[in-house]
Length: 345
Image (tube, rainbow, N blue to C red; front, side, top):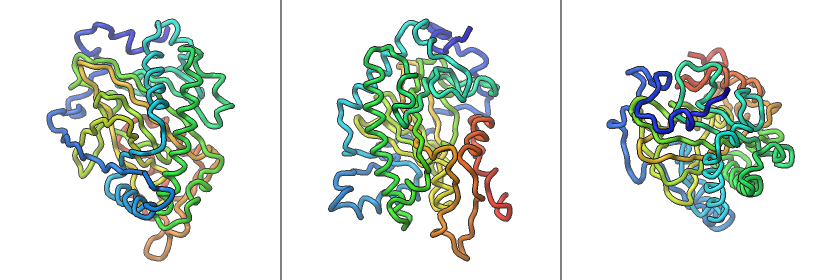
């Protein structure tokens, strides 16, 4: 019978051995930098009019120097965000028998509750349970979602619609920041895809021994992250892990591997990880904005010339995603498998 982490470790005083990382691969929490301004905070007010060129410049610099930024005044109402966070917490506090109705360890299922990352392939488990949902087009997937808590489908659908709108606006701005037409990225993604995870990180008796999620880059285009008020996200910047403090009602945006391909390495996808703590459970909700599986990914022709040859071959997103899932979460990027032969290391 499937066991979720939250039910396995309720009241535990130590971390079970299959969660313990080898000594060379632990969070080293005392070496993590922390600051209020660890990644750029961009005010999106005026993106559609007077401040557009200024905001696009800020987004371009953030993409170039960090691969991560936070956004405020993004147009998504506080109530939509509040409902999403509260219904997520309610779901993970339901009785085990109710939650397990959604359980599956098949990564191809479009709605599934699971634990860690890929229990079939990994050697060491990660300290999280998660509910993964596909959410675009909504009408194709909503009927599969949990029907408990009663407002779950309605609250999550409203949130998904809003975040999709934000993702599309951000992709236009990122396209323009590269000197491309505003609709370049949106066209490159084919019919588009949108998934989300609701990550639940229970309290952990020995947080220094394990990860909520180890360092990894995201395989998609951009990720729009909502987190509650408990810190846990860390980003690799200039070779050092930096803790990102949660700011209420802001989203954290990070570039995924496909932006790196489309931009021909002008922008990079960035390693990030989640750490856990012994005092408070944490919920984080990443929305993974993706190409459709049949979309062909390749560097934008406008960014290619004699001095900037293409660094990646063409591939379908389905091909990429399959490799990512099989390799598991590690700091070696799946991008290496798609480099043009003359540029592979």
